[in-house]
Image (cartoon, rainbow, N blue to C red; front, side, top):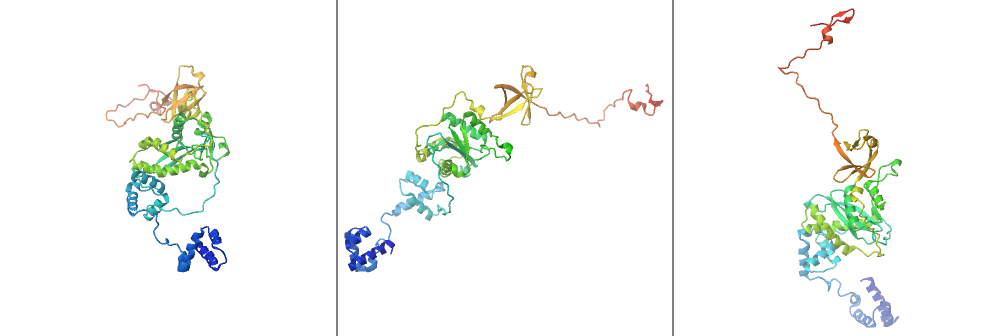
Amino acid sequence: MTQEELKRKTYLDKAIDGRITQKAAAETLGISERQVRRLLKRYRQDGDAGLVSQQRGNPGNRRLKEEVVTQIRQFIHQPIMAGFKPTFMREKLAEATGIRVSKETLRQLMIRENLHLAKAQKPKQVHPPRERRERRGELVQIDGSYHAWLEDRGPKGCLLLLVDDAGSEILAGEFVKTESYFSYGELCKRYFQQVGVPAAFYSDRFSVFRDNHPGACRKDSITQFQRALNHLGVDLICANSPQAKGRVERANKTCQDRLVNELRLRNIGTYAEANAYLPEFIADYNRRFAVQPASLLDDHLPLDPQIDLDFIFSIHDSRILSKDLLLHYDGTTYQVVTKRNPVYLAKREVLVTVNAEGLVSAWLDGVRLELKPVDQSAKPAPVVDLKQADRTPLSPPVDHPWRTYEKKLNGKPTPVIE
């Protein structure tokens, strides 16, 4: 008997002995007086067994029909559905077959069919939740996620995501080969042009966002990405833990589950095709999981059309021109081609930029200089074969020491006239 059934037995015994009334027993047990009379009748006839639920051990009245369970089993055992989690599997089951079941029902069925493993309960470290920002664009979380997005149909790749902190909305995303300054720069350029310039970015401590070299001399150093954001007036905040930027981390986890399966269903085998499908997935993701920010105001600022994003998101460095107007950068020497007097350019500091294609440019006072690569490698000397049969010997000059060998007058060589 359960605790509830034992409690009923106690108060029914009191009612039978006349210690309490049937009305008092009903009020204590939270049932009607009529139900108390029914229980008393069964208790007098069958004893303790009369208080045990007659449904115990029998199948539930709301269980699924066997033919429906068989249809669900056939669907979840399809090879193309491998790796689907219960929630996503439930959605695809409803779309494909029209069968609607609860997530827990499907989860239990997938566990029995060895298609899903229940997570072990582990003690979790407590991370106090951080309140969302109120306005869209006030804080945008940025991160990259390496994963086998195409499974065995292609190599591993990295998905870059920009997620709004106020509403968990994915603002931009792109598949790239690796996390780098130029890959983040290309994503940010498209995001600034389509959505606007946010107030701040929230990232991890990856080397693109933060200078991780030790030493006091590095305290004030900034990365190329920080320099570009400072030029646009965007703050960059580096989180101390992954949990601090939980919005984008959860988005990565959801994409690793849903996006991988969606790419498989569409038989997408290249990252170019994946990037073409990504906007459709992001729109569906935002419809399902994004929430309404607390404020209707938007902190995104429109991009100034006079700003050259390609120039800002290039690598910026500085060099000093030599007196011959030579510029040395990354192992290559460039000659500055100009009609001006070299004295006005020699020993001047110039800005050197390198774009994503590797094109090197030099700038002086905002004016682009014309550069020409110079080959300064030493030319090899010609190889002469000294064992040629038809070689003509050369006669030494008249003043060669060989001609005055052992022919001296008063200690001085005596020239020999032929």
